[in-house]
Length: 636
Image (tube, rainbow, N blue to C red; front, side):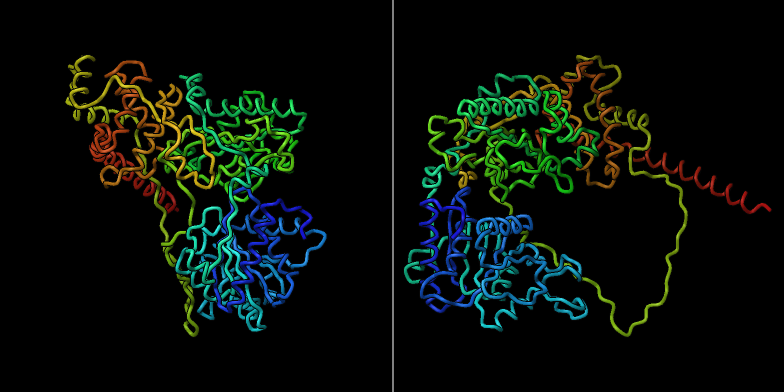
């Protein structure tokens, strides 16, 4: 068996899985589903690998079989393969394959093929050379090598049965195309492994051997010391002691403070464990770059440095960029903070990670619960007695600015993915040489506002017209007109954040997140106010859809728009930028009831004739220069 000793509940689960499998195998039917339900952190991969290994030595059951182990991304496929190899390093009896072994042409006895499900269902996404699925059109097929269908056909031809293991099954096998692939594989048994299976078989199906069901109880996993007892979010007290401070800095400060507390508690137990803080950044950094703002990555790195954190103590894990990640899973690794986006969402284990700082997405605020699993594991699962009097070390800590209604359970494959057709040149048709005409045209239109001073003058005139403000109005009179139009000049800008929540069942976190805890209204800090104002200037230009108001080059236009707003607001509300930023944000947050939103659209429409005049003048000047150049070149 595995050199990793199975805990009591794990051994019981492997035995139940084996007994269920053999009982259903004997029915002679195909595609019989077994649901293996086991909590996050319980060792699903270890138990599934031991089940496969056990089949090699099951008395009175000798059948020719091979396995296809499906995951939902390449990283997880490789992680599962590497874990299997580690578990049985001294007595590995199954050949472990990946997509690179497809050209072997078939699965041999006891082979385990680890493959990314998305690469199978997205059969039109890859190039001809790398494509796994066989194209129906023979002209699209590669000259040599095997396709996935070839491997299945050759395996079946040798009368070798296939056992399909679908890891994280709630994310896979949910589309028509996926069902077609399963039908083609025609596995004898399908084992769906998940902490939250989408479908559980009925008692009748289990009783009459139409399906199987094996479940590991979460309480057994906690009692064995594998996972933490609960996850707790920031408290109201945590946030109020940082009242008025920048909200992004507050989240990081809370993570730093908790890390130091846990580090001290480990030291009191004589443990050489360095707690790791995971910091999940939003995916809107490109938008911020376009808007001329610092990205969250830049902000967090600068802030950690200002707090005395060394560069060598910060790891990065982004697509195409990794730093200080070597051996980061070791309990005494010196790295204290790791920044990531979605890379560490699922399938990565780092037991010393106990704290998660999660920044809210601005564009699509969806709290993805699977990321919480990265702070669920215990640092020393084989020494549970050492921690019986240390409740903080049996707890995961979450600091986030999400609200309760922004939870998203899991990402699934796109069921409505558009079909992509690759054009093939027909045989026998001669396509002659051709060329495209080209002409040099001077660049006159950059898709922006073109002249910031003219735009500013036009903008102020248009906004004043909207609110019926004249040049004779003194400041108080202008304020009265804004209030009469429905503009709130007194309210503060607040946002809601979840507090005082404790989650005991991670796998039901999507339900618990919306029910537990409370939402605390926090006044937005001055720094946050300005950041939000900048962002809204950018977004309001993006959302323009009418031809007369649409600006295509937003990166060059949002700053002149911000300046125009600032000049107009100063005339109406005075020098306090924090005041008029708050007035603006509160109004825009009203959505369809906003007064400034349609006022901007009208201001852009009013500026359109002026913009056209600017561009026409540029065009005439450019044409004049071109004619002069042509005359000069034509002169002998």
